[in-house]
Each structure stands twice: as structure tokens, then as C-alpha cells.
Amino acid sequence: MPRIILIETSTSLCSTALLEGDKVTSYRQSSLPREHASKTAVFVREMLDERGLKVTDCDAVCLSAGPGSYTGLRVGSSSAKGLCFGAGIPLLSVGTLDVLARQAVEEGLVPEGCKTIVPMIDARRMEVYSAVYSVPDGSDASCLPVRQTEVKPTVVDGSSYAGLLSEGPVVFIGDGAGKCSGAILSPNAVFAQECPNARSMAAPALKAWDEKRFENTAYFEPFYLKEFVATVSRKGVL
Figure 1: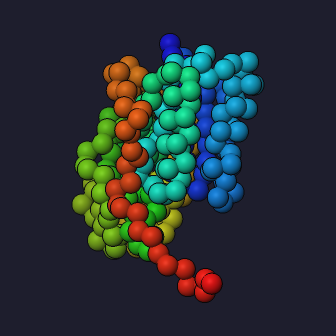
Figure 2: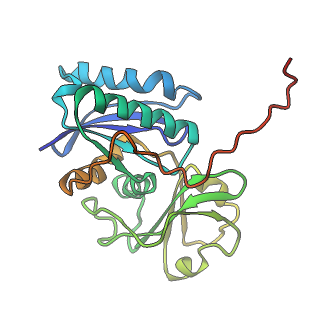
């Protein structure tokens, strides 16, 4: 079984995990702002030291590839590429919404009878990056939710997801879920305001490894979904 370094920097939570076989054996996280660049490499080193390992003892690095924060995704991508180039190991990537959907199952947030998960990444105002996932076996912790719709930006209002909610419980999870709770008022809506974490990358990463879905390390780019827009500071600059 593979040994894979997992890196999740797509939102305000910066986290890393070490997957050995089918178990996460080490984990680090920080939710302090603007710490991704200073913490990611440190966390990886600490995990490997804890396990008495080097990067070259690992089989791959897996990155949570977005959508999410432009800066966070750049930091994660640069860190993952550096590790891969330095150790001569392959790069894997998994979708951030895939990670969140899996996280809902692992944390027992899917109520009995619920067949739908909608992960949401905050995209400012009432917009989120989202997709719809089905849960084949309800809340069975062994299942990997299956994406049913494309990942896209969605402006959430009172009519959003009305069709799904009329059919039964729907779990909305992610750092964009909380702000949507004021607009989506159905009693079938379950909200979990939390960031994706590297531990929940384990199952999607193993699937990518088993399917040999290796990225081109030199040319890989995160899934930004929207182009980065630079703004001019309102403060005077001399």
C-alpha cells in the first residue's frame, strides 16, 4: 500500500496529513490567517520526523486542487510540486469538493435517509462554488460520494436546491454553507460550516493512486474556476 503526503490549503484552514496504507498516521492543521506559506512545508517536515521518514520514503504527494482561495491553492501547488521534484515522486490531485463530500460522510453528518450532499466553497457575497453529490449507501462510512453535476459558481437564494430538498434531507457542507442557511429555509436542509481538511483526502487520494491518475508535475495548475482579479488598494501609495 502507498505512503502519500496529503496537502489541503484551499480555504482558511491549512492542513497536511500522512497516509500510510489506508490509515492517516499523522496530521497537522492551522486555521490562523495567512499562515499557509509559512506552515505547509513545516507541517510536512514535522509529520515525517514524527514517523522517522524522509520525503523519498513516500510514494506520492496529493494536493487538494480546488476550487478555493487563489493564494491558498498557489501555496499548496508550489509546496506539492517542490516535494515531488525534490524526491522524484509523482503528483496526485483531488477535487476540493470531493474532499468535502467525503468529509460529510466520515464525520457522520449524513442523516439516515439522506442521499444528497452539496459541498460549498465560499466565493464571496451569496455566491459559492458547489456541485451535487449522491451517497450510494446513505451514511455508510465506507462509501465515496459520487459527483452528479459539474462544479460551478452558484448564487444562492431562497429557491436554490428546492427540487433536491423536496425529495428529502440534503447536507450542505463547507465554508460557504453557513451564509446560505439564511436563504435556504427548508427543514430538510442540514448545514455544516467547516473547511475541508487533509484527513478527508485519504479515500479520494487512494482512488487516484489506484487509477494511476498522476499529474504532469511541471504543468499542473490548480482548479481556480475563476480567473484571479487583481485590485488596486484604496490606501494611498507614494
